[in-house]
Amino acid sequence: MSDDIFRGRWVLITGASSGFGEDFARQLAARGAHLILTARSEAKLRALGEELSAKHGVLHRVLPRDIGASGGAIALADEVLALDVAVDHVVNNAGFGVGGPFVELGAARAAEMLRLNCEALTVLTAKLLPPMRERGRGGFLQVASVAGFQPTPYMSVYGASKAYVVSFTVGLAEELRGTGVRMSALCPGPVATGFQAVAGIEIAPSQRASVLSSEETVRGGIQAYVDNKTVYVPGVVNTLGGLAAKFLPRALVARAAGQMMKNRGRG
Image (tube, rainbow, N blue to C red; front, top):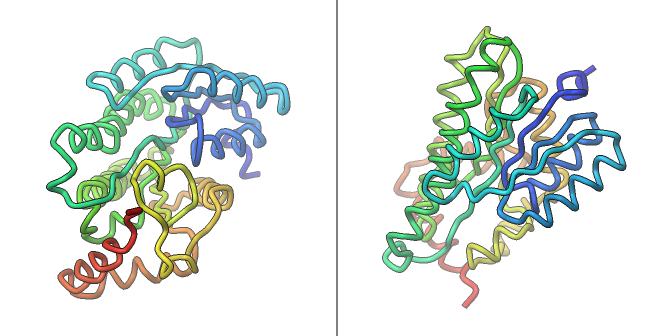
C-alpha cells in the first residue's frame, strides 16, 4: 500500500499554516502521518495540529520559526534534530514571490526571497538528509514551480529561485539513486492561494485554463512522491507549457512570459 511510507512516520512541513502547506498537513494526516508543523504563525499551527490530531489520531509537534530570517533554517533544523522523533519525510513548501520590475524589488526583499526559497530549503535538506541516508528510507518533497523551467520577466528572482530548486532536486535524486531516499520536485502552475496576494499579481486570463485547486495540486504531488517521480508538473496544460519552454528558443519564451507578466499586476 502506498500509504505505508507515511503511516506512523514523522513528516516535517514548512509553511504549514496556509495554502499548500496546510493542504499537505491535512492530506498526510489523513494517511496516518505524524506532523511537525512550522511557519511564523504559532496560533494557526497549533489550531491545525490539534484539529488533525483529534480527527486522525496522529501526533504533532509545532515549531514556530521564520526560516526566511538569517539563521532561521539552521535553528529550525537543530530543533527538529533535537526532538525525540525520527523525521522520515520533509515537505519543503515555504516560499514566496514578488511581481514587478526587478529594479523596484529592492535588495533586502530579493535577499529575503532567496533565503527562503533557496537557502532554507538547502539547509534543511543538508541537515536532515544524513539520518535518512543512514536509515535507508524517507525523502524530500521540494515545492518548486513551472516558473523554474523558463526565464520569468517581472518575477525574475522568483523564477530563478525555483529553477534552483528543480536543478538541486534532480541532482540529488541521482546522487541518492539506490539508497532508499527519494527526492521529488513538485512544480505547480497557477493555483489560487495566498501566493498571489503576497506577490501582488493576479492569475492572467490566458492561464485560467491551467488553474488547479491547492487540494488537487497537493494530492498529485504526494502521489508523485510516492511513485518516486523526480519532477512532477500537475495538469495537462502546465505540462505542455513546460515542454514548450524546454524546446522553444529561450529569448522567445522570455518575450512571451514578459508580455504575460506585464498584464498580471494588480494596479
